[in-house]
Length: 367
Image 1 (tube, rainbow, N blue to C red):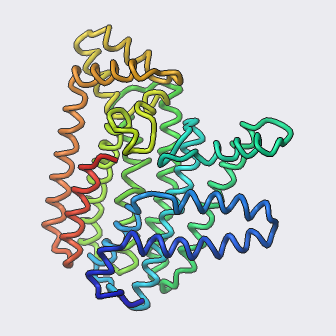
Image 2: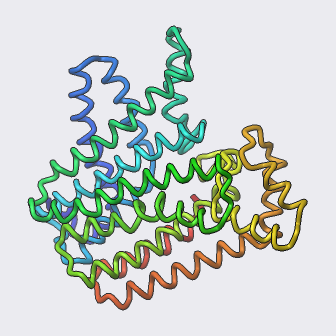
Image 3: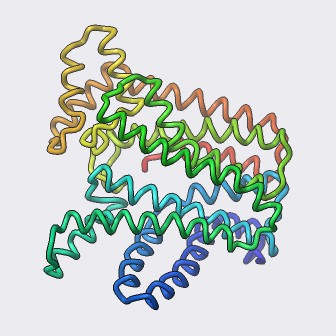
């Protein structure tokens, strides 16, 4: 792979290159699926549309800069293999999103119908027999599983040397287990009503921080053959930025603009998510014996019919109880500690500077 127009130009459009790599790979897999049966090909087309229809390509970007920070080449055959390996992370993300939307019964993702809703509508439009909800659920489970299987396929067919692959599989395997474990704890937290900040933070670390920043960084660094000190620094940086990223996501889940986020305002409240934001508010309400605030939070959490007026009331309570300020403070502190780990690591340029820019971009955002 040669960087079109030079290395700087190539890396400036890294998400675009990830998009094109995914498009080429998914087209080949769709062709295989269509050979099995036209119905399978049509289902895979919906999955491919979901993968290619949006997303910031954060995980492949962090993997790439983990590679570059550890001495990985900017172009050539090794870089081409790394680009495909990094792009495979988007298929793990796809699996997580498709299943997460199903678990949360979400209607939209990135401003479009979620996968299970698409197939529910297909059932209705085609006048199939049976239950349309069950059909949509089954299709989403299977397509999410397919995306996870293809993530492994894409990684293993990337052309990475065998020794580098063995190193990469350590964080890769850990990442898959961690994200699914975090998802399970998230579901458990909603039904067992564990409202402690500690439980919310553990879910945040496993479900988001690990597979969003830390493990992708490690995958790239391991493929490049990073030494123990560089790996440790990237791990510290990735863990802190990953948590800060999810904390920002929690704030956007309640306070974000639907036109920007692509999801209805207050969806996290409707889904009953015990985020760090909510946990901080509940803890303060209990400490201050603010029963009215506590009652309102408990009333809105998990209410699928939550109105915009009630969402606004919840926003006011979360703000008045200091939860928003507390979460913003955590984001600032985590970003600061991550930057310290980055600047003392002696990582290669331009990767160190790009990672610093990425840290700000993912923790100070509106979508």
